[in-house]
Image (cartoon, rainbow, N blue to C red; front, side, top):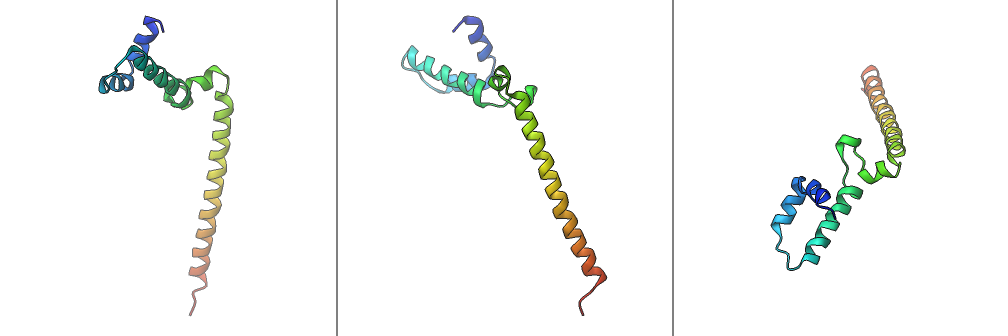
Length: 101
């Protein structure tokens, strides 16, 4: 890993915190920990600045598909909630118009 890349990752407070909490017994152990963090940071952690996808999603061209699927799911959820709330509102309105004796 180049010094510039290492410095970039060390700017991240999460990595700094992780690196400072543990005692490493060998350079290989430190290297593995850094590689694990970099894998997490680039492949599993969502980044708000790039649309809550991972940098790997952007790099491999998956961002637009992920955002499209999320938008579709959001629209389905909104429609489902609207149908549910309208049916509840209609039940309440019908109950108020036809009170049971």
